[in-house]
Amino acid sequence: MSSSTRLEAYRNTVQEQVLPMYESLGQLTLVYLLGSLAAGYTQDAGTWTS
Amino acid sequence: MMVWDDPEVPTASLREPLVARLDERQGVSPFVVDYRDIHLERYVIDGQEYNVAHQALASFESLLQSILDGRRDNTERVLDPLVATAGFAYGELVWDRESRGHQWKSRLNTFPPMVKQECRRAVLAHRQAYLTDLRTLMGPADWFKFHCTLVEALRTTVRALFALHEVYYPGDKWLRQSIIRFGLGEEVLTCFGRLFEAQGSAPERASEQHAALLRLMDLVEEDEAGKAGKLQPCQSEHVCAKREAVVTDFPIGQPPYMLGGRFVTVTLVYHSFPDRSARSRLLPVLSTAQPTAAKARVPAAVPGPLSLREEGLSSLWEISHDMLQKSIFRRKTTAMLAAILVPEDASS
Image (cartoon, rainbow over all chains, first blue to last red; front, top):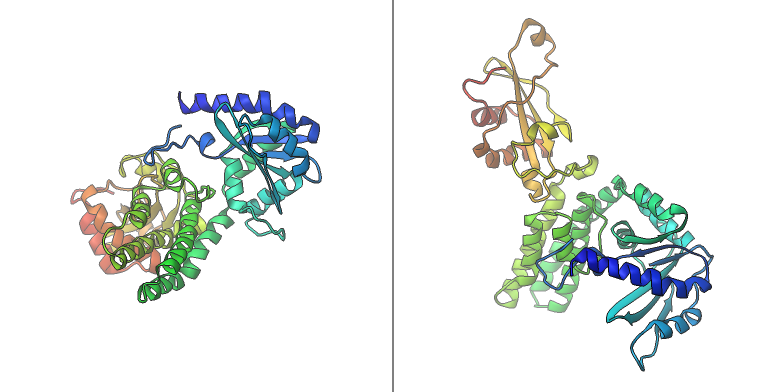
């Protein structure tokens, strides 16, 4: 699975499963993905995939 | 990261039941943390671990604004504002009510010159102390303290290198990948590797690490352009191929001098090759002009640069560096440049 496909999968999970659960807690204004998954870093120390 | 348009983020006690429902792991206590400005939880969905952090909008915007302004605000934080900014700037928006996220990303597109200057200044201010401390600690083989100091010095230096490349420091994790991703260059990558792959006895490894750190600090110090100019990204792999296109990037003009009956003008151009060291980025561009009666009185008009001889580039570094450092254009330098650069049949 390419990095962008993986990212899309995480995005869908957050949008469809996670965010609806938090809606009752307050006024969400901004949500973003960051970190190694969003950046496309892999365990292979010499590579970076976009 | 979730940003809430509320005075405070939802408390851990409110988030904990959600975490328990979202986490597919059975029999695991919900991982939920509230500590000062850190609000975090962790759960696994479809085998993937998610770490979710929270910030209040006011705090989030204050943090970003402090980076844009290049000054510390008076807020005490655990979060490192520069790293938090990187997380947002290079992150992927999922939810952006009222387009605030896009607006902030747009503002952050212009890297704050003050951040560049401050990060570089931090290296220059502490450079000698770090290097001396490391040398001192090598004597009694105080390796734990040696490595503590080494990491602190390295972090300060690498932050500056990222800033000089107009990249918000992405944090300590995955740093090697970030050096590659953001194009800090082969020399930075090599030195970074030397720090962790040094071989030999403990003193030998320490000497190698000291040398690698010193070189990284040199790269920061040499980056004169970082003090004032914006480094323009350039994808060129060949110095000469794009030379004309970058002449206006960061020219440091020198007054024209007479040499062999011609006016000679050298302009130093800072060329931001992502895959080259700072040392190899300074490109002297030589221009000559035949003196006419008018030019002899007012030698202001300088024609376009002549073609460079590639083989002379390595020698030119020392010359251009000298000129940059001391702002002196010497006759000897002029003669050397001319010998290297000016073809016999060059026309004005």
